[in-house]
Length: 367
Image (cartoon, rainbow, N blue to C red; front, side):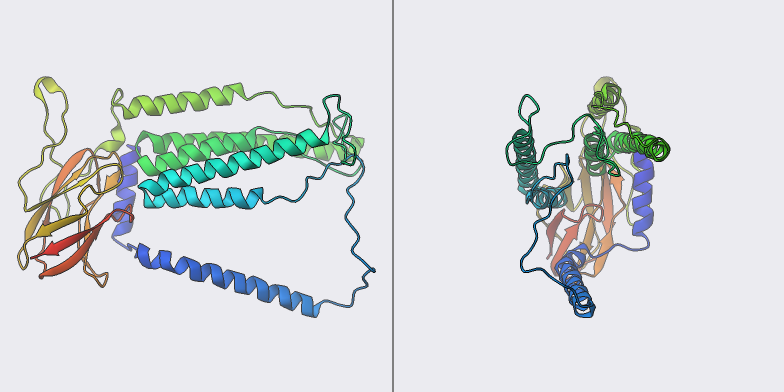
Protein backbone atom coordinates (compact mmCIF):
# COMPACT_ATOMS: atom_id res chain seq x y z
CA UNK A 1 0.00 0.00 0.00
CA UNK A 2 2.79 2.44 0.91
CA UNK A 3 4.66 1.62 -2.30
CA UNK A 4 1.48 2.02 -4.35
CA UNK A 5 0.98 5.49 -2.85
CA UNK A 6 4.62 6.43 -3.49
CA UNK A 7 4.48 5.15 -7.09
CA UNK A 8 1.21 6.98 -7.76
CA UNK A 9 2.69 10.20 -6.36
CA UNK A 10 5.75 9.89 -8.62
CA UNK A 11 3.61 9.18 -11.67
CA UNK A 12 1.27 12.08 -10.85
CA UNK A 13 4.11 14.57 -10.36
CA UNK A 14 5.79 13.39 -13.58
CA UNK A 15 2.70 14.48 -15.55
CA UNK A 16 3.35 18.08 -14.52
CA UNK A 17 7.12 18.44 -14.55
CA UNK A 18 10.11 16.15 -15.00
CA UNK A 19 13.20 18.27 -14.40
CA UNK A 20 16.29 17.96 -16.51
CA UNK A 21 18.46 16.53 -13.76
CA UNK A 22 21.65 16.90 -15.75
CA UNK A 23 21.05 20.62 -16.23
CA UNK A 24 20.11 21.09 -12.56
CA UNK A 25 23.22 19.31 -11.33
CA UNK A 26 25.40 21.44 -13.61
CA UNK A 27 23.92 24.55 -11.95
CA UNK A 28 24.95 23.49 -8.43
CA UNK A 29 28.52 24.91 -8.70
CA UNK A 30 27.13 28.19 -10.02
CA UNK A 31 24.66 28.37 -7.12
CA UNK A 32 27.40 27.71 -4.57
CA UNK A 33 29.63 30.34 -6.20
CA UNK A 34 26.77 32.86 -6.04
CA UNK A 35 26.27 32.15 -2.33
CA UNK A 36 29.99 32.63 -1.66
CA UNK A 37 30.00 35.95 -3.55
CA UNK A 38 26.93 37.16 -1.64
CA UNK A 39 28.48 36.21 1.70
CA UNK A 40 31.77 37.95 0.89
CA UNK A 41 29.89 41.05 -0.29
CA UNK A 42 27.82 41.09 2.90
CA UNK A 43 30.98 40.75 5.02
CA UNK A 44 32.75 43.61 3.19
CA UNK A 45 29.70 45.88 3.51
CA UNK A 46 29.41 45.19 7.23
CA UNK A 47 33.10 45.85 7.76
CA UNK A 48 32.99 49.08 5.73
CA UNK A 49 29.97 50.42 7.59
CA UNK A 50 31.15 49.46 11.07
CA UNK A 51 31.81 52.34 13.44
CA UNK A 52 35.20 53.18 14.93
CA UNK A 53 36.56 50.56 17.29
CA UNK A 54 39.40 50.61 19.73
CA UNK A 55 41.80 47.73 19.60
CA UNK A 56 44.55 46.75 21.97
CA UNK A 57 48.19 46.43 21.12
CA UNK A 58 47.71 42.76 20.47
CA UNK A 59 44.94 40.24 20.37
CA UNK A 60 43.67 39.08 23.75
CA UNK A 61 43.18 35.30 23.83
CA UNK A 62 39.65 34.22 24.85
CA UNK A 63 39.30 32.82 28.34
CA UNK A 64 36.50 30.41 29.20
CA UNK A 65 34.58 30.86 32.50
CA UNK A 66 35.81 28.83 35.49
CA UNK A 67 34.90 25.14 35.48
CA UNK A 68 33.95 25.24 31.78
CA UNK A 69 35.87 23.10 29.29
CA UNK A 70 35.92 24.51 25.76
CA UNK A 71 37.15 22.11 23.08
CA UNK A 72 39.83 23.43 20.78
CA UNK A 73 39.43 24.24 17.08
CA UNK A 74 38.78 21.26 14.83
CA UNK A 75 38.40 20.39 11.15
CA UNK A 76 36.36 17.30 12.03
CA UNK A 77 32.93 18.90 11.34
CA UNK A 78 34.08 19.96 7.86
CA UNK A 79 35.53 16.52 7.14
CA UNK A 80 32.34 14.83 8.36
CA UNK A 81 30.27 17.13 6.14
CA UNK A 82 32.47 16.16 3.19
CA UNK A 83 31.99 12.50 4.10
CA UNK A 84 28.20 12.94 4.14
CA UNK A 85 28.39 14.70 0.76
CA UNK A 86 30.33 11.79 -0.72
CA UNK A 87 27.84 9.32 0.76
CA UNK A 88 24.83 11.14 -0.75
CA UNK A 89 26.70 11.55 -4.03
CA UNK A 90 27.31 7.80 -4.07
CA UNK A 91 23.63 7.08 -3.39
CA UNK A 92 22.68 9.35 -6.28
CA UNK A 93 25.17 8.03 -8.84
CA UNK A 94 25.27 4.39 -7.72
CA UNK A 95 27.91 1.90 -8.81
CA UNK A 96 31.34 2.09 -7.17
CA UNK A 97 30.71 5.67 -6.06
CA UNK A 98 28.23 4.43 -3.46
CA UNK A 99 30.87 2.28 -1.78
CA UNK A 100 33.46 5.06 -2.07
CA UNK A 101 31.00 7.45 -0.40
CA UNK A 102 30.34 4.97 2.44
CA UNK A 103 34.09 4.49 2.97
CA UNK A 104 34.74 8.26 3.07
CA UNK A 105 31.86 8.82 5.52
CA UNK A 106 33.06 6.05 7.84
CA UNK A 107 36.66 7.35 7.77
CA UNK A 108 35.64 10.93 8.55
CA UNK A 109 33.29 9.88 11.36
CA UNK A 110 35.98 7.65 12.88
CA UNK A 111 38.38 10.61 12.74
CA UNK A 112 35.84 12.81 14.54
CA UNK A 113 35.26 10.15 17.19
CA UNK A 114 38.99 9.66 17.74
CA UNK A 115 39.49 13.40 18.11
CA UNK A 116 36.64 13.67 20.63
CA UNK A 117 38.02 10.79 22.71
CA UNK A 118 41.50 12.31 22.65
CA UNK A 119 40.09 15.65 23.84
CA UNK A 120 38.24 13.89 26.66
CA UNK A 121 41.29 11.90 27.73
CA UNK A 122 43.42 15.04 27.87
CA UNK A 123 40.85 16.92 29.92
CA UNK A 124 40.36 14.61 32.93
CA UNK A 125 42.55 11.95 34.51
CA UNK A 126 41.18 8.69 35.79
CA UNK A 127 40.89 10.24 39.27
CA UNK A 128 38.95 13.23 37.80
CA UNK A 129 41.87 15.58 38.49
CA UNK A 130 42.27 18.28 35.79
CA UNK A 131 45.13 17.92 33.40
CA UNK A 132 47.87 20.49 33.86
CA UNK A 133 47.33 23.42 31.54
CA UNK A 134 43.84 22.33 30.51
CA UNK A 135 40.49 23.79 31.48
CA UNK A 136 38.72 21.49 33.96
CA UNK A 137 35.46 19.83 33.06
CA UNK A 138 32.30 20.76 34.99
CA UNK A 139 32.11 18.92 38.29
CA UNK A 140 29.18 18.06 40.49
CA UNK A 141 26.68 18.13 37.61
CA UNK A 142 25.99 21.85 38.08
CA UNK A 143 27.36 24.54 35.71
CA UNK A 144 28.33 28.00 36.98
CA UNK A 145 25.58 30.42 37.88
CA UNK A 146 23.90 31.91 34.81
CA UNK A 147 25.27 29.24 32.44
CA UNK A 148 22.97 26.54 31.07
CA UNK A 149 24.60 23.47 29.60
CA UNK A 150 22.28 20.86 28.03
CA UNK A 151 22.61 17.46 29.72
CA UNK A 152 24.07 14.50 27.80
CA UNK A 153 21.64 12.74 25.50
CA UNK A 154 21.43 9.72 23.23
CA UNK A 155 18.95 11.52 20.94
CA UNK A 156 21.48 12.61 18.25
CA UNK A 157 22.62 8.98 17.90
CA UNK A 158 19.03 7.74 17.65
CA UNK A 159 18.17 10.42 15.07
CA UNK A 160 21.21 9.38 13.01
CA UNK A 161 20.00 5.75 13.02
CA UNK A 162 16.48 6.84 12.04
CA UNK A 163 17.76 9.05 9.20
CA UNK A 164 19.80 6.11 7.93
CA UNK A 165 16.66 3.95 7.85
CA UNK A 166 14.77 6.72 6.06
CA UNK A 167 17.50 7.04 3.39
CA UNK A 168 17.39 3.25 2.92
CA UNK A 169 13.61 3.50 2.51
CA UNK A 170 13.90 6.27 -0.08
CA UNK A 171 16.39 4.18 -2.07
CA UNK A 172 14.74 0.73 -1.83
CA UNK A 173 11.11 1.71 -1.20
CA UNK A 174 8.50 -0.81 -0.10
CA UNK A 175 8.44 -1.70 3.58
CA UNK A 176 11.73 0.12 4.17
CA UNK A 177 10.09 3.45 3.33
CA UNK A 178 7.41 2.87 5.97
CA UNK A 179 10.05 1.72 8.49
CA UNK A 180 12.14 4.87 7.89
CA UNK A 181 9.13 7.16 8.38
CA UNK A 182 8.13 5.37 11.61
CA UNK A 183 11.72 5.51 12.94
CA UNK A 184 12.05 9.24 12.19
CA UNK A 185 8.68 10.05 13.78
CA UNK A 186 9.45 7.98 16.89
CA UNK A 187 12.92 9.44 17.50
CA UNK A 188 11.90 13.04 16.76
CA UNK A 189 8.95 12.80 19.16
CA UNK A 190 11.31 11.45 21.83
CA UNK A 191 13.73 14.32 21.28
CA UNK A 192 10.85 16.81 21.44
CA UNK A 193 9.76 15.29 24.76
CA UNK A 194 13.30 15.61 26.17
CA UNK A 195 13.55 19.23 24.98
CA UNK A 196 10.24 20.11 26.61
CA UNK A 197 11.36 18.51 29.87
CA UNK A 198 14.67 20.40 29.74
CA UNK A 199 12.88 23.69 29.05
CA UNK A 200 10.63 23.14 32.07
CA UNK A 201 13.69 22.48 34.24
CA UNK A 202 15.38 25.69 33.05
CA UNK A 203 12.20 27.68 33.68
CA UNK A 204 12.01 26.23 37.20
CA UNK A 205 15.65 27.18 37.82
CA UNK A 206 14.69 30.84 37.34
CA UNK A 207 12.63 30.51 40.52
CA UNK A 208 14.81 28.14 42.55
CA UNK A 209 18.21 29.36 41.40
CA UNK A 210 19.34 25.78 40.81
CA UNK A 211 19.19 23.70 37.66
CA UNK A 212 19.46 19.96 38.12
CA UNK A 213 21.34 18.36 35.22
CA UNK A 214 19.93 14.92 35.92
CA UNK A 215 23.25 13.08 35.69
CA UNK A 216 24.27 10.59 33.03
CA UNK A 217 21.33 9.37 30.92
CA UNK A 218 20.32 5.73 30.95
CA UNK A 219 20.71 3.70 27.80
CA UNK A 220 17.57 3.92 25.63
CA UNK A 221 17.12 0.15 25.56
CA UNK A 222 13.43 0.30 24.65
CA UNK A 223 14.05 2.62 21.68
CA UNK A 224 16.98 0.52 20.47
CA UNK A 225 14.80 -2.59 20.77
CA UNK A 226 12.01 -1.00 18.70
CA UNK A 227 14.50 0.12 16.01
CA UNK A 228 16.01 -3.38 15.95
CA UNK A 229 12.54 -4.91 15.54
CA UNK A 230 11.84 -2.51 12.66
CA UNK A 231 15.09 -3.52 10.92
CA UNK A 232 14.36 -7.23 11.44
CA UNK A 233 10.81 -6.69 10.16
CA UNK A 234 12.17 -4.95 7.06
CA UNK A 235 14.60 -7.79 6.38
CA UNK A 236 11.83 -10.37 6.82
CA UNK A 237 9.44 -8.43 4.58
CA UNK A 238 11.99 -7.95 1.78
CA UNK A 239 12.89 -11.65 1.77
CA UNK A 240 9.28 -12.42 0.76
CA UNK A 241 8.42 -14.13 4.06
CA UNK A 242 5.73 -11.47 4.38
CA UNK A 243 4.09 -10.28 1.13
CA UNK A 244 5.21 -6.74 0.33
CA UNK A 245 2.03 -4.87 -0.55
CA UNK A 246 4.15 -2.00 -1.80
CA UNK A 247 5.47 -3.93 -4.78
CA UNK A 248 2.16 -4.19 -6.61
CA UNK A 249 2.51 -2.48 -9.95
CA UNK A 250 -0.17 -0.18 -11.36
CA UNK A 251 -2.13 -1.18 -14.41
CA UNK A 252 -1.01 -0.14 -17.83
CA UNK A 253 -1.69 3.43 -18.85
CA UNK A 254 -1.05 5.71 -21.78
CA UNK A 255 2.16 4.92 -23.52
CA UNK A 256 2.14 1.21 -22.60
CA UNK A 257 0.65 -1.72 -24.43
CA UNK A 258 -0.29 -3.64 -21.30
CA UNK A 259 0.24 -4.20 -17.58
CA UNK A 260 3.15 -6.03 -15.97
CA UNK A 261 3.57 -9.59 -17.18
CA UNK A 262 4.77 -12.25 -14.73
CA UNK A 263 4.95 -16.01 -14.95
CA UNK A 264 4.19 -18.43 -12.14
CA UNK A 265 5.95 -21.70 -11.40
CA UNK A 266 4.18 -24.97 -10.88
CA UNK A 267 2.43 -25.44 -7.53
CA UNK A 268 1.79 -21.73 -7.08
CA UNK A 269 5.42 -20.75 -6.33
CA UNK A 270 6.39 -17.46 -7.89
CA UNK A 271 9.16 -17.25 -10.46
CA UNK A 272 11.04 -14.42 -12.15
CA UNK A 273 9.02 -12.54 -14.77
CA UNK A 274 9.36 -13.95 -18.28
CA UNK A 275 10.32 -11.65 -21.12
CA UNK A 276 7.61 -11.39 -23.80
CA UNK A 277 8.42 -10.95 -27.47
CA UNK A 278 9.48 -7.40 -28.29
CA UNK A 279 11.75 -5.48 -30.65
CA UNK A 280 14.10 -4.57 -27.79
CA UNK A 281 14.60 -5.63 -24.16
CA UNK A 282 15.84 -3.63 -21.17
CA UNK A 283 16.44 -4.81 -17.57
CA UNK A 284 16.71 -2.81 -14.35
CA UNK A 285 18.47 -4.41 -11.38
CA UNK A 286 20.09 -2.89 -8.26
CA UNK A 287 18.99 0.60 -9.36
CA UNK A 288 20.85 0.43 -12.68
CA UNK A 289 20.18 -0.71 -16.25
CA UNK A 290 21.98 -3.92 -17.09
CA UNK A 291 21.99 -2.91 -20.78
CA UNK A 292 23.87 0.32 -21.38
CA UNK A 293 22.89 0.46 -25.05
CA UNK A 294 20.05 -0.94 -27.18
CA UNK A 295 19.31 -0.91 -30.91
CA UNK A 296 15.79 -0.33 -32.28
CA UNK A 297 14.33 -0.07 -35.78
CA UNK A 298 14.22 3.43 -37.24
CA UNK A 299 11.22 5.27 -38.70
CA UNK A 300 8.59 2.85 -37.40
CA UNK A 301 6.86 2.04 -34.13
CA UNK A 302 8.49 -0.64 -32.01
CA UNK A 303 7.95 -2.46 -28.73
CA UNK A 304 10.27 -2.32 -25.73
CA UNK A 305 10.02 -5.00 -23.03
CA UNK A 306 11.16 -3.48 -19.74
CA UNK A 307 12.04 -5.98 -16.99
CA UNK A 308 12.08 -4.23 -13.58
CA UNK A 309 13.75 -6.67 -11.18
CA UNK A 310 13.86 -4.15 -8.30
CA UNK A 311 11.18 -3.61 -5.68
CA UNK A 312 11.44 0.15 -6.28
CA UNK A 313 9.67 2.07 -9.06
CA UNK A 314 11.41 2.52 -12.43
CA UNK A 315 10.46 3.44 -15.98
CA UNK A 316 12.12 4.27 -19.31
CA UNK A 317 12.18 7.69 -20.94
CA UNK A 318 13.80 8.23 -24.35
CA UNK A 319 15.25 11.65 -25.27
CA UNK A 320 17.08 12.99 -28.27
CA UNK A 321 20.55 14.52 -27.96
CA UNK A 322 19.05 17.98 -27.32
CA UNK A 323 17.19 16.66 -24.27
CA UNK A 324 13.70 16.68 -25.82
CA UNK A 325 11.54 13.79 -24.63
CA UNK A 326 10.45 11.38 -27.37
CA UNK A 327 8.76 8.77 -25.17
CA UNK A 328 8.06 8.31 -21.48
CA UNK A 329 6.89 4.95 -20.15
CA UNK A 330 4.74 4.33 -17.11
CA UNK A 331 6.43 4.05 -13.72
CA UNK A 332 5.96 0.71 -11.97
CA UNK A 333 7.55 -1.38 -9.26
CA UNK A 334 8.99 -4.85 -9.71
CA UNK A 335 9.64 -7.59 -10.00
CA UNK A 336 7.47 -7.27 -13.11
CA UNK A 337 7.71 -6.78 -16.87
CA UNK A 338 5.92 -4.15 -18.92
CA UNK A 339 5.89 -3.86 -22.72
CA UNK A 340 6.06 -0.27 -23.94
CA UNK A 341 4.67 0.71 -27.35
CA UNK A 342 7.15 3.36 -28.50
CA UNK A 343 6.46 5.83 -31.36
CA UNK A 344 8.72 5.84 -34.42
CA UNK A 345 12.18 7.36 -34.00
CA UNK A 346 14.22 8.84 -36.81
CA UNK A 347 17.57 7.20 -37.47
CA UNK A 348 20.22 8.42 -35.06
CA UNK A 349 21.42 8.37 -31.47
CA UNK A 350 19.19 8.86 -28.42
CA UNK A 351 19.48 8.44 -24.66
CA UNK A 352 17.24 6.57 -22.24
CA UNK A 353 16.91 7.13 -18.49
CA UNK A 354 14.68 6.47 -15.49
CA UNK A 355 12.71 9.56 -14.42
CA UNK A 356 12.71 8.34 -10.80
CA UNK A 357 16.45 7.59 -10.65
CA UNK A 358 18.18 9.93 -13.15
CA UNK A 359 21.54 8.20 -12.60
CA UNK A 360 20.15 5.22 -14.58
CA UNK A 361 21.05 6.04 -18.18
CA UNK A 362 21.94 4.40 -21.48
CA UNK A 363 22.08 4.90 -25.24
CA UNK A 364 19.51 4.10 -27.93
CA UNK A 365 20.53 3.63 -31.56
CA UNK A 366 17.74 3.80 -34.14
CA UNK A 367 18.80 2.24 -37.48
